[in-house]
Structures are given as C-alpha cells and as structure tokens.
Picture 1 (cartoon, each protein chain N blue to C red):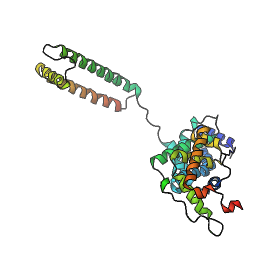
Picture 2 (cartoon, rainbow over the protein chains, first blue to last red):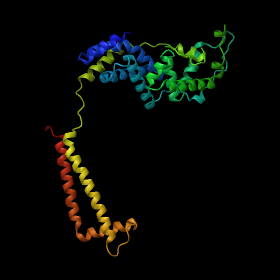
Picture 3 (cartoon, chains in turn brown, purple):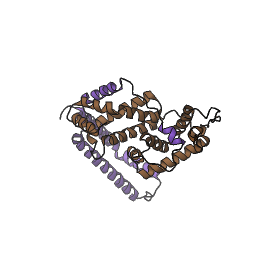
Picture 4 (cartoon, chains in turn purple, blue):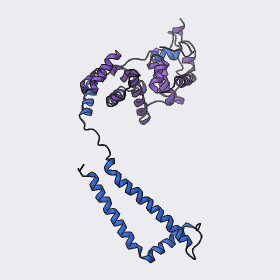
Length: 188
Length: 134
C-alpha cells in the first residue's frame, strides 16, 4: 500500500472523478473490515460498519489534512465510527464476571488447544469495559504499536498505555491460569 | 514501530497477535462503490434558510422580551396597588388578582384578538418559509 496512491486517488476524487475512490476501497477494505470484526465479532456487521466508514471517508475527504498519513486519518475515522456503533448496539458478549476459566487447561497431550485458549481470551477481551477493550483491540490491530493505537483512538500515548496496562491486568485477573504462567508448548 | 509494555511476550501477546484475518466478501468493494455513487448523486442537503428566518427570529425574540417586560411591570404594579400584599405575596393570590384585573378590564377580547393575530402571522410566516421564492 502506497501513501502516494492514496494521495493521488484522493486528489482525483476531489477533482470530480468519483470512481477513483474504488482504489481506496480496494486498498483498505481488508484492514477496515478486520478492524470492525475485532470490535464486533460478527462478519456481516463488520462489513456494514466498514461500508459506513468508507462512506464517511468519502464525505469527509476534504477534511483530510495532509499532515497525517491517509491511513492514520482513515483508521481514526473508522475507529470513532465503530466505537459509536458499539455504544449504540453493543456486541453480544458475556459479562466479564461471568467468564469462567476452563478447568482442564493442561491436557496430557501438551496443553489446551490453541483455539480454546484464543476463544477464552477473546471473549474476555470483548467483555472488558469499553475504554480498556478499545485500547487492547487497537494495540493488537496495529501490531502492538502504541503510537498508532493512540492516533486511531485520538488519545495521548500515555493514556493508551495506562488503559492497556489496566486492561491486561483485568484479563490476567480473569484468566490467571491461562495468562499468568507460561504454557507448556511455549516453555519447550 | 513496536513497543514493549514491559510484560514480555506473554500469553496475551501470543494469543491476540495471532488473530485470524478475515477477507471481505467478493462483492464488498462493489457494494461500497454503489453506495458512494448513490451518495454522490444525491442532491446536497438543503441548508437552513438563515437569511429568510432571521426577521422572524428577531421578531420572536423581541416579542418574548416585550412580554417579559410587560409581565414584570404588571406584577410590580399589582404589588403597588392599595390593599394588595407585598411583592413577596404567595403566587396564587397574585395570579388570582391578575385574572380579576383582566376580567374587569374586558381584556379577554384583547387577548383573543392577539392570539388570533399571532396565529395568523405564524401561518403566513410558515407559508413564506416553505414557498419557493428566493
């Protein structure tokens, strides 16, 4: 993905050639749909939210200031929309206090199945209070880049770090055996 | 740029970093583009006609201010009338006196006429606002 491609397509759209927006959609559909999916865990809803994010981006192209990269602006816009949507219609989650750590986490074959562990952790993340969940989701979406997560959330890096810390503490508190000790596979 | 938060590569990082990527459905881009085309073809939203509304708004504000002043003056005059209580008299008695005064002065007709006038002006103003004159 090239920043100059984005810049060129934006200029073309602003000059009246709307079909140039398709280049932007094709380049960013994967990331935007995946980001939405991490928030709502529903493929259909993720596509609806991503489509709305693209529409908002189209309407607001003039507001993109070239100081930030197009992707930074687009992710911030999409994140803002996704968070608003989730406040409006929350994703179906189990309350954090109702999440129970699987008892049989270390089976004789070397440990719990990865998919069970993943599922338990993701359910716990989805059940976090919104501000911690958002920080955790954005941090891992941006490959553990605090700065990028902070830009998407429109928050100072320090705030995001604090929320990440608190969110991870809550996850460890909820799933102490899963997250508190190294797993057998990793220890080998 | 990748930052470590001081917890090392713990299980949270391991699990949440290996998130499966989902692929948008094949028609997603086309669907977005048709929505964009619809959006572009739609007429721009009609801006609020401030220029035309301004006189009405000014009149409304002035009327409200006048009514407020008139009400205050009326209450003060009522309080100064012989036989009436001080300004801090209980509100029900003030209201009763006001109603009595109005009845005595035959002001019901005046108020009715005023209400009719306000209704007429409102209707005319609404018609003016929605008419296609520029």
